[in-house]
Amino acid sequence: MIQRGLIVSCQALENEPLHSSFIMGRMALAAKQGGAKGIRANSIKDIQEIKKNVDLPIIGIIKRDYEDAEVYITATMKEIDELVSEGVEVIALDATSSARPKNEHLDNFYKAIRNKYPNQVLMADCSTISEALHAAELGFDYIGTTLVGYTNQSKNSKIEENDFKIIREILNKVNRPVIAEGNIDTPEKAKRVLELGCYAVVVGGAITRPQQITERFSSKVSELKDRN
Image (cartoon, rainbow, N blue to C red):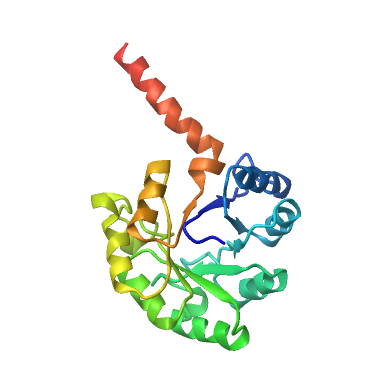
């Protein structure tokens, strides 16, 4: 259902104005009415509320901080258990080389998930080409570019540079469906990554975070003030 379609990330963290499961449910409904084919959502409460409003496939995550780790997106089996119990179609998890809780290696974590939940569809949130290749070798069902530019090892990378060079290289080297995500903030960029061969595209803040959208308009307006 999500193939060559738009997935809208409906998330708001505790420090954001729209932090509310009720609001995320209505946001998901608005996304569906606008043509979204899937929803990416964070936390069991938000997922439950979203399910009340739409019947779209959900990529579920749980963001939880751990003192001994850089990884915070579905970082341990605790989060996996919660998401499986909720019955989300796809579970996304950090598949980067960043430090994991209790210094667990991604390979061991992946094997443990597959042993416990062999039929669960899994998406790898990656930040570099090498991480995407490794995730594909492990056997993740979907490879995502979610964390490009957000990790120490990718902080100098921009997903859209050189006509999405990172995405094109991943597409050429992996044998898994690639879901484009991360700073895809215009309709033209979303269209382009699908043209390149991505299975689907996820757009978040450009649709669902009004403070970010407002900042983009405000910065342009400020440029006129500065000239005066």
